[in-house]
Amino acid sequence: MIAPAMSQARFADPVGGLLEGRDLVQAFGATHALRGVSLAVAPGEVVAITGPSGSGKSTLLHCLCGILTPDGGEVSYAGERIDARSDAHRSILRRTAFGILFQFGQLVPELTAVENVALPLLLGGRRRGAALAAAGDALDRLGVGELAPKRPGEMSGGQGQRVALARALVTSPRVLFADEPTGALDSLAGEQVLAGLVRLSRDEGTAVLMVTHDAAVAAYADREVVMRDGELVETGGPNGLVPVGAALTGARA
Amino acid sequence: MSTPHVLLGFLAAAGRHGYELKRAHDSHFPRARPLAFGQVYATLERLVRDGLVKVAGREPGEGPERTRYVLTARGRAALDAWIVEVEPPAPFVANALFAKVVVALLVGASASTYLGAQRAAHMARMRELTALKTGTGATVSDVIAADYALAHLDADLRWMELTGQRLDALRQEVLG
Image (tube, rainbow over all chains, first blue to last red; front, top):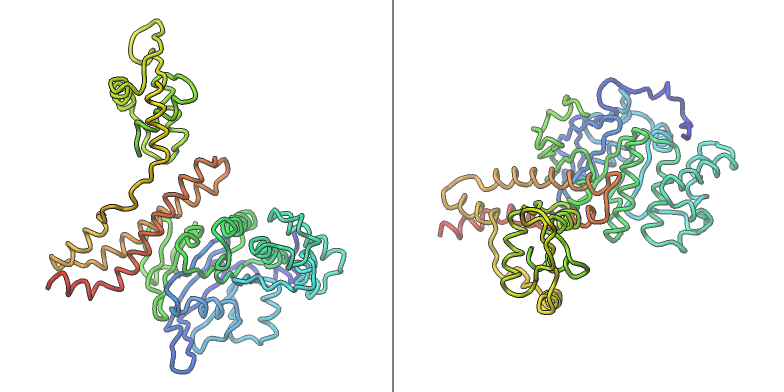
């Protein structure tokens, strides 16, 4: 287990949701991407945000992880509001408590896999030797330890995405944000990425919030929320549909 | 699924008893409805009648489970022909989901409420199957059975999504 660079006391577990967005509003010019969306994610929970193109899925994800500041509403992590904090503070949060995985892994082409995975630790001030050792462990846990010395150009798309997943998880984040994590992969490669993601969430209690347009990907989640025209229209779970609004208070296994 | 041909396939390697055929079926097709013994023996009887299978021997004791069956040369030829024969791809387009949407519109019930509920049930089943295939101890047969069902449920979901967007136009057409 890799210790987070930031102390746990600063971001202690809340009683309710680990990550909460309340009444989020976001507009780009005249386009309303979010029209008052509320969503809470519990520790260890895997939540899929689905919906058609342009429904606001990615905007919701970007507001919750602090890349975007919403025009209205609040985002809380571990009981503390983060939407009002400085960019620098949120940037530290994204490097420590949060892990982020995009559709295209965005690995640095000049670096080897293990160096790519070590980056967040090096940026957080970890010594090079310790960072590389932890990065090697993270690759091993995703079953791609043998890729450590390879550069992104020498890997398949699925291998690169698993390396990117290892990089997103190397700081032992409490929340992993994934935007179409398998969108660029064939079915089998996508399955390996998703299986790794869900297994690590189970093993380490990491909450996962992923955006996907693909029902087969959403089926890896414990719960699915559906967006349409900037609003949350359904929040489902293992027991079927939950009315919108109950998600904030509903207890999750 | 063509149960007679599946049984011919299991008999191709070696003669077997009826209960061995049932066991082979249930382990190769783990998410299928388990084959009933009655169906196994009824099918074998027909295959014997048609000359595709013959009785190779009876062990001492009572009942059909003591009978060993083997494939005949004709049975082998029928099996080989079945394997290379292409199945007609969706020759008739009919399905309970499709029927409910049309009939709901005809009688003025809410097709979109039905589609929403069906979508949730499909997603719940997809989560179940995904958990099954990614669970520890899943065999390759388990995985491909789950894959097959997941792909079909996914296709249903895409159809439901499109149909949901076409409900107004469909209502006009159905109600004339």
